[in-house]
Image 1 (cartoon, helix red, strand yellow):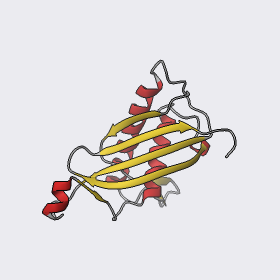
Image 2: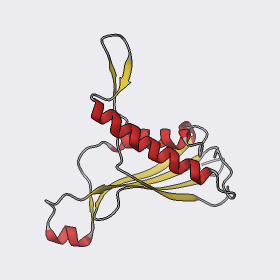
Image 3: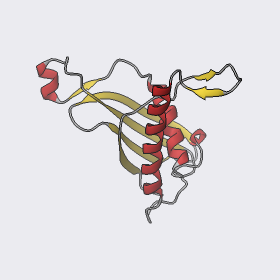
Length: 149
């Protein structure tokens, strides 16, 4: 790949939270069933989209590092936002979920979809959370970095 790979993932971004140890010793994702379901749906949406992108002829997948990844997470704008903000159509999201936990779920989906070899090869990145009027999900941009910084 010489050109960056960019694509959109539709859905509701969900974090990969902390793990919970059950009384029987099993370790599961998240605190409750709803959170696990949201995480599973988001990770599957990312993996399915990554798989489709990886199958394109001009993409040599899995991508190997070092990589730069930019992700813009798009959340629905609450109705409580002012008219001015709603008319602008975009605002910063400054509430949960934590951006690092969103990255964890998203990067694992990129690996599961076969687009990148391992999320450890992501050497640098940018991420942002915004509230939008319109579709929700993520805009993802991946590019190879030079061998030396």
